[in-house]
Every structure is written in C-alpha cells, then in structure tokens.
Length: 234
Image (cartoon, rainbow, N blue to C red; front, side, top):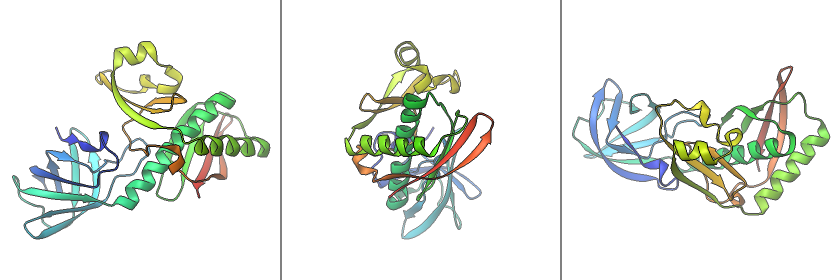
C-alpha cells in the first residue's frame, strides 16, 4: 500500500520513491505526495524523474492503492524516482478545500444547512447544501461571516483519531463519519480552530488568512430543498 505523504504535510512538493509495480501507463510507488482525485478535490499533476528521463503525471487515482498515470513508457519496477508536484495547482486546491470546510461550517451554524456535495477547481468551487433557497440578503450575510472568519486568521490543523473515539466525542453532523466505510478505523480529522472539525483526507492551508476574499458568484436550484452555491477566492 502506497504511503500517502500528502496526509502529513500539504506544503511539500518534492519526494523520492521506488516504483513497486507497473501496469500499462499506470505505476505504483511505495510513497507519494501526489493527491489522488477524490472528495471533490482534483488530482495533483506534476512530473516523475529518473536516470535523466522525465514522465508527466496525467492523473492519479486511488483504488486498492494509489495509481499514477504517466505519458510515455513508464519507468521500470524497482527504479528510484524523484517526484515533483505542480505547487501552484496544489496550493489553489488547498485554499478552495479549506474554504469549502469553512463555508460548510458557516451554513450549518447560520442556517442549519448540511453540505451534501462539493467540487473544487484551481479558480473556483461549488457546494451543494440542504436548503430551499437563499435570498440575496442571506448571500450578503454569508459573505460577511466568511470574510470575518478568514480575517480572524483561524488555525487549520489535521490529525488522526480512532473511529470509536471520534464517534463518541465529535458532532456527527459536522464530521459525517457515518459516510465512511466501517472498515476505516482510523479517521483523519481536519480542524479549523475549534470552529469546525470534519473527517477529510484532502489537503489544506494552515490558516484561514491564506484564503483571500470570499465571494459568491452564482447559484443553481438542485431540487425543492437543495441549492448549489458557486464561489471564488479573490
């Protein structure tokens, strides 16, 4: 099983690893910083280098382990490689993922609106929530609260907790641990300065002050009791 280095430090961009397995254009490494697509967060991109050759990583997926899709003939099994992720792309995902967590907390606190889905990109994001329809005044309020929390410079941290302890001590509406398979017994918690704690395997910034200005850019009605909010970080 590939060691997921991105779970410990979201800011690292370079690592060394060994090729454990090759399957067509996919390779498995013993360790990686490349985040695999999942949880509304796109995969990291970047390059792998070995013996003077360079491979572009075109996709990263997690199934039984983490697979890296590369262009060209892959490096051989046993090769030692240096991996470098696209730092600018990763950092944008870190910002938008953290903003999504903060927005989910604001919507739950202010409107009892639970998050039902999300998708983030490098320049925008969206969130689906269980709420009939927001008014323009409520949009203004959401933006105000969000930007206030951003300006507060709240600390963002992550750590592991046993599933039993998490289920016994944390708010299930926020952590949403029940959505995870029962086979997962160690839960990674992302915490925003006691304001929010959520089970998440994504990458995040270390302080909300890194997010910039939050702005809602649009909405879509997803049904009689669900709305999709679109936002950017300026």
